[in-house]
Length: 85
Figure 1 (tube, rainbow, N blue to C red):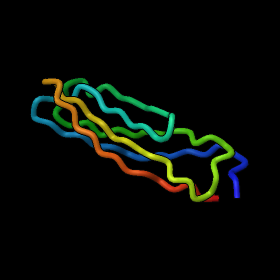
Figure 2: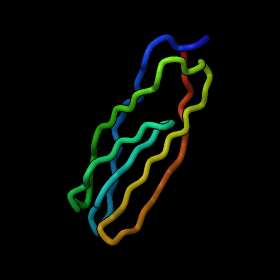
Figure 3: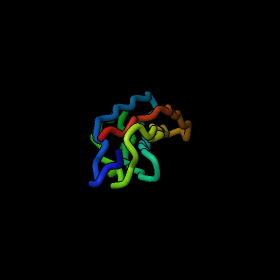
Figure 4: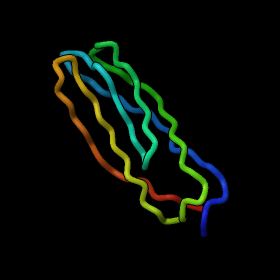
């Protein structure tokens, strides 16, 4: 089965660092979303990324969550979501 419409991946991400958060980035497939942390020690923010029509059911879509603190240190976590009909 192939998706005949555009769909989305949405959620909330939280990052915390004593030096302050500079930025966070979320990618899903070829889509990317980012937010400015404003050098706050904690940032919680929502995201919504588009999954294009024509994505095969069962396709694993890679996702990456990355944050950078005020000192320039970056942390990244990778996972995936599965497309459903």
